[in-house]
Length: 148
Image (cartoon, rainbow, N blue to C red; front, side):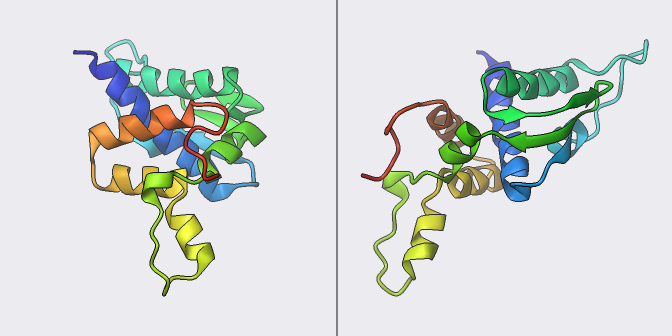
């Protein structure tokens, strides 16, 4: 089983949501804030888990989901912000999440059905399979997952 892929999906979701929450401000995106404190190894190097999370964030930048100015040692991305691509993917509607409750204002229904809100709920519920499914939606281009 590829457990590092499950961790990757959680790291991607947590990192992107932190940036979405701050958007459009630039922030310091710290690995420790996303995965908790990990003790360095006996040589003072970050743990494999810590390095994997930082690697996921750097991969997101390489793929155009976020931008940053520099790294802070192995601890953080400095002045990080969502790119247009990242913002649009997180703010799009997940069709199966739409609630047709007429008592809710349209803006509330739209927000609740956004990929960002769905990811937030899945992380809060610690529902690993749902996090993975939703994180994969983040990587789909085009109208997949969008309301038409």
